[in-house]
Image (cartoon, rainbow, N blue to C red; front, side):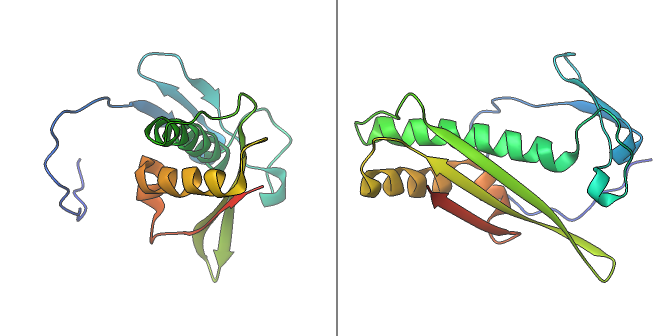
Length: 151
């Protein structure tokens, strides 16, 4: 059975670049495997949410890793356009919170961007540009509380 949900109409796609596929069973206490087998992980509920101390990750950790990696690449693209380079020790510490209020769940996130040795104004310009182009930033814009900080 397929259930169709309302979707927004996006601009026509010039070229489909990639489609990620994953098969997940068991929800937060299950497993997920990508179609190419490169990702094959166990999922577990965090102890803070009443989970057992079992091996595995959770959707919020996966989201934090994916967004920070994508954001770093977007900063690299912005740096190239600005004719500068990211410092070799550039890093992003991503934090994704799962919030609960009256039985409803939502996310909030922080990206703490470290660009050692880069002038603060240039670093902020790179972060601002990346936030406009990063697909994860676009997906979250207006949907969750987001804070992006140059640290």
